[in-house]
Image (cartoon, rainbow, N blue to C red; front, side, top):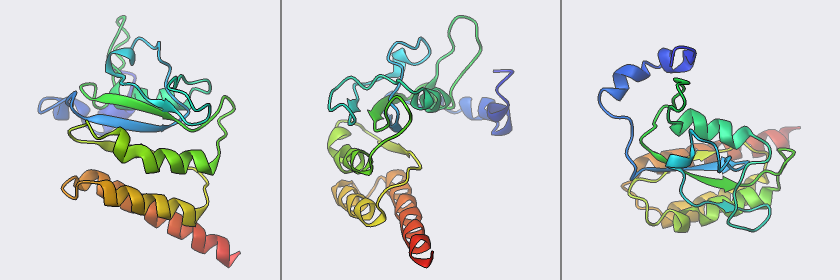
Length: 178
């Protein structure tokens, strides 16, 4: 991964001596979908959902979600030497952005609210949330719903949901002060 400075910066090679991830870990990428035919990603993809088109085809038309998924789980192919941080994990694309990289707050919120049900079969669900502009109180309601549906022992996901909640509260407070 010579050209991937970030992997060197976080000492990924040392971490990979311990683990490269586990296929029982499914990382939900809430973004613009994922290129379902990308050779570095297809081995790690699990079925996702397109909340924009209300279909099970979460193919990426914008590209950002594919980039995020690649950073997380890309597997080396064709001698490129490119690798994600956790190539042993799997990715579930949850498409909330359209071909222009735009999306509705309702689609983001629905993806988050439905996430516990979508990930029921996952052993250790992990969430990557798009930093989107949404209605803060509606987002907070969805985060509360998701937290209720979670197994309290999954501290990683609970911590990430708390971080989203804090960001939403900060945005709401900032909007009021303007």
